[in-house]
Image (cartoon, rainbow, N blue to C red; front, side, top):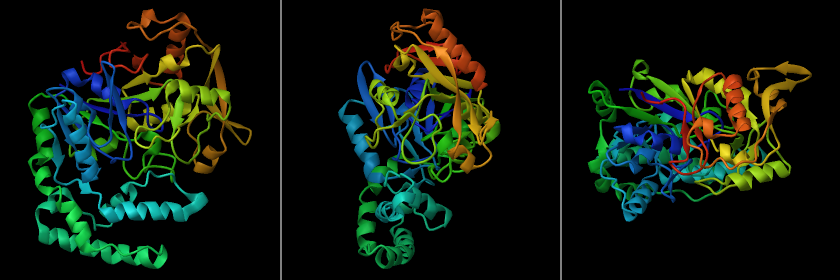
Amino acid sequence: MPAVVVLGAQWGDEGKGKATDQLGARTDYVVKFNGGNNAGHTVVINGDKYALHLLPSGILSPGVVPVIGNGVVIDLEVLFQEIDALEARGVDTSKLLVSSAAHVIAPYNRTVDKVTERFLGKRRIGTTGRGIGPTYADKINRIGIRIQDLFDEKILRQKIEGALDQKNHLLVKVYNRRAITVEETLEELLRYAERLRPHVADTPLVLNDALDAGKTVVFEAGQATMLDVDHGTYPFVTSSSATAGGACTGSGVGPTRIDRVVAVAKAYTTRVGEGPFPTELFDDDGEWLRQTGGEFGTTTGRPRRCGWYDAVVVRYAARVNGLTDLVLTKMDVLTGKEKIPVAVAYEVDGRRIDEMPLDQSDFHHATPIFEYLDGWTEDISGAREFSDLPDAAQRYVLRLEEISGVRISSIGVGPGREATIVRHDLIG
């Protein structure tokens, strides 16, 4: 049985949660391997909407073991708010496993995130202010707090003292904020320790044993390729590895064990926050996509920036991730357009560029070269076979497959779990 990575091919919000959820019936483990509560997945089951932030989408599938891997940064309060909300709706969360090596978002990380972003002014990155970046910075600077530290108060206190020796100088002397005390930080973190303890495990060992036993493991990315700290539109990126390589470092499973890498892409493109976006629309079409597609952030509620499908971006995602399959979502949103533009290349300083520009400046100034495909007016939300789609919709899918360089194995035609056309099995 395979190990499957599911990630985003664009700037996030592509529908990764739904894609992971669809694999749930034949999946034994679903692992979140990067990010924190700065991104959300929305899953609709029988008309009921579930918004997940820290928890893997597999938590909604009975029999699946959801795992939060070592590459994730965890806000403990948010984690248990999510758990309580799901339990109140009858969802069993008892199988959840949390890596002992995952890092904890301390209250001072949230404070630093917010004041730093405000200080940047026009140079702001567009973070969610939830402490994600500062927590990853602490991890790299080796002053971070890990889940395992919560169970040794002496070590925890020492680590908090060490971190605050630096943070308080910054907060007081640069940002004119009050100093944060060791005691208030210790109290907040220890509040959740005993409740968390039953979920903590050596998750790399668990996952490797599961693969040895022939179980199916799905690795679920937070954010997406174009927000990856190495391969995204730096510096307008997240602070972790949202590409396929991050599935290995963020879970403790080696690259030779990965069988499939599946990327999810909308039939158009969106992004949240600052940064370049070549196909972005500032006209009625952009607002139409936003309203028709419900393009508002799961975590923040922020309106998403909207634009047409960008094949250059998806080709790039196919390359850096080694994609085997593409899941196309929100095809139904495009219903009603006479012509649908698709970016097949860019123009930069009078030159045609067919692949991702070498540097960020060129990408920022890139003008999309569009190909115009025929649209359709028929309602496609009830389609369950590829042949059910109107001819124009079929041609749209086939052309996107051709210019994106990877097979389109699944097509989303509505928000529900069942509103999907499967062309190729993602697991078999």
